[in-house]
Length: 532
Ligand code: UN1
Image (cartoon, rainbow, N blue to C red; front, side, top):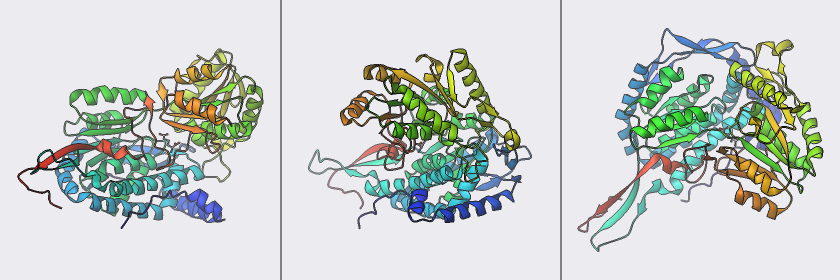
């Protein structure tokens, strides 16, 4: 039987088409109320098949209120060691289960996650401040990863490929084997989707995993691991260790029995790991390390579309996406008209408690992000930037206890200013003027990063011209649902060039899984044949 074709969950879109948005809202609000009753609960790590608690814990905060929503154990190097050793011991049996058995586990996990979607979306809002619509998108992306990777295993028949026949008595075959144990280090910004995608990629190919979530979002990872265990991933094959980078992250990366590392996070940490990890012995290091994504608005652009797409991309989840647009180059002939539209739309955005239906932006993740925002504002002011929208930290009324800042648009900065080069990861976008398309491409490519790119132009040749010249792994033309954000599993393989990534194969794309595997060619001579 042919495997079923992959289809995106697309819950928000699908429910809106069916006129059922109210149902989604009700489920979300019920889940939120249930979660609030658990406030302050102490949750365990899941290490080597056991629930592990320590007297020393750290607080998991709601960034909108500062409230403690849960407490997690401060893990240690001993927890890491126990997790890695259990993973190493359990991995061979997991590999022997075979790809069909593993694919079935992940299809089952997709079903469980679908059932728990409202809870996961509400939890995400509480833990990282993502608004409800974007939280649903995040959970959908996780379910998509589970389904897509299971489908990829089936499509490729476990990546077993018959090879040639160099001599008449030889039968040769290529098989792809897991490396062993992968360390997975996750980010706060897509706390369900990204840990799920990275973990599923490693596990479905027959590896074992030790997952270390971002310290700001351990609860979401806790639920992801619980769901994968429930679906049938053996507990020793997948452990969750919580705690700081120094206490847990570093010992995990340094552990001699870790055979591969998957990381999504900052460039600084990513590059430091790179040297340390790959320098020690040959093994895969799959890292996604940020972006300084540009959108180019040409003289042939539909300016309404351009402004809508840039607002979504620059300010979706408060600019805290690797894929966010944080710089815009606009042709001088349409610059002022575009800026007027962008300004109007940015000023209309509503910053509020992220669980409220009317909130476009919630808080940024923590006090450090507010500091980054303030430093970016100060640097732009110093260089004569003009703030046409935002620029302030919000401290009024109910926002006082959270980390709230205004969506900010700056114009008039020199094109070599840091706002066009450095990743801030806050809702801050710099808009500059360009004279001809050659100059625009030069400016876009002048940043170290090369993750996503958007161009807005109604001229197909002009779009193609940019696509062929811009150095970025993910490119979009005329996308008003996000000029550079919103990659969907199976539709936009998501991976970066240059300092944005260490690999060349995008997540949610056809080549991703091969990174977790190493090839082994097997020759059966003397007329023997491989077992069927
Ligand atoms: C990230 O921020 O690390 O394309 C990934 C997007 C999301 C993924 C972002 N699907 O915006």
